[in-house]
Structures are given as structure tokens and as C-alpha cells.
Length: 186
Image 1 (cartoon, helix red, strand yellow):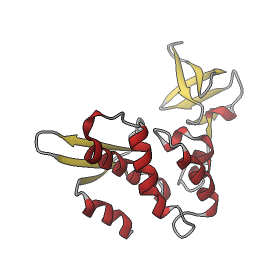
Image 2 (tube, one colour):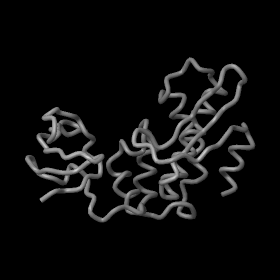
Image 3 (cartoon, rainbow, N blue to C red):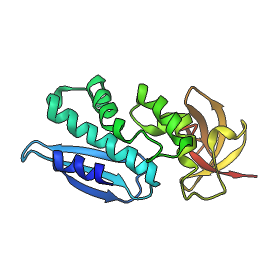
């Protein structure tokens, strides 16, 4: 896509496609020693999630260029820059209609992660090459057991955006995103 190249040409940066990272979809870094910017995006994202993440990270770069390092990572300056950079691609020529509407809604008040927006996450996941046995954690009932990151858990109760779960082996309790994809164990 020419737009992504144009963003890179405006303020060049080192770009890397990385392995899957469970903790983040992409990353922006600024090296104060040499003034170089770098952006990484996970390789396993579908093309729509990849584009949104790329622009999300480019908005961090633009925020650093415009305001320096004194701003909050996902503060008002970043939100404004993210909206500005997303505007040219918020069209049905780039995104399918089922993604476009939740994405436009998300862009009114963007969150630190597109995956923090349940409506947007739901439609983006429809374009993933996911294992059909995986379901969002919030679809399970209390007391159900499931596998997540190669461990077995029991679902206890839903908090606001996370679910309190108990690991089967250790009985330790963890908060897991209600949108996490898990394998239901019957």
C-alpha cells in the first residue's frame, strides 16, 4: 500500500516484522543516542489488524516528532495523531464494511490497543486464520475449564474487562482478558 510507504518516507524509521508476541501487536521505540525511530509489527496479524497496528505505531513516531518524549504514550496528542493518520484509510476501498463501522467508532476515542475494543476485536477476528476450537473466554460459563497458553484453568468470575481464573496445577489465581481466545475443555 502506497500510504504506508508515504508514512515511512515522511519520517524514515527502521521497520521490522516480528514473531508473535502475546503481550503486544506492535511496538515503537526511539533511540535518543542516535535519533533513530523503529517500529515493529507482529507477523501473525491479518492484513487489517496489521495496517491498523502499523498506523498506530506510526502515530507514536509522529507524536514524538511533534511533541518530544514528554507526552503520555496514549494521551491526547497521540490520539489526535492516530486519528489524523487513520483518516485517509477509513474507506470501504481499504476495509470491508463489517470492519469499517466499528473502526470509525473506535477512532472517535481510540484506546491503547485495538484489542481493548470488544466490538472492533470481534470483527477483526473474523479475518484471522484462527484455530476453530478457540473461543473468547467470556463465552464460557463460570466453573468451566479451559486451556490457555499451555495451562489449564477454571473460570471463576467476570470483572469489568478481565476474568478471574484459577490455574489447575497451582491453584493460583490470574486475571485474563475476557476477549482472550481459549480452548474449552469439556
